[in-house]
Length: 161
Image (tube, rainbow, N blue to C red):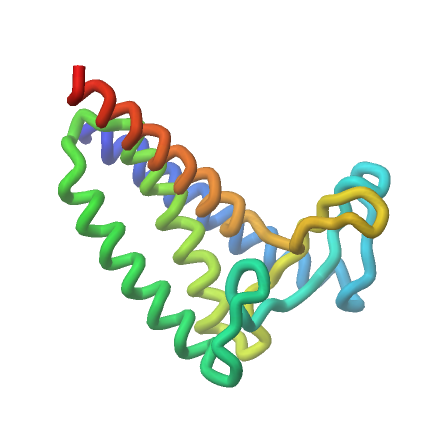
């Protein structure tokens, strides 16, 4: 197995599984919805919510479920192309792509299995100053995208030298 595949596949499988399991646990243990459960004081709470829209409230109205499902499928196709274009020795890009793909698949799964939308439950902030409620898939997409950007910048600088 190439270093790229050796980083990509475990990241994809582990993150997807952890995301799926934590969302099902949130649905079964964090009811009723929108009631915070303190984890680390008031800073980290688990609060069950369903998001029919996309990150940070981006909405397509009544077409959100279909629109974001199609968008996720298109993004996954582009990520597949990026994976195949990535050199086999590029472990870090493989890891980054694995994180993004796992997150996209995790949220796509929610959209496909429930009309309620994506399960969100991680609630971070202080008092009333809170970040959007999110999930493991969202964190994986964000971390993977940041890593991809950083590795891309690093590769560009190497190419210029």
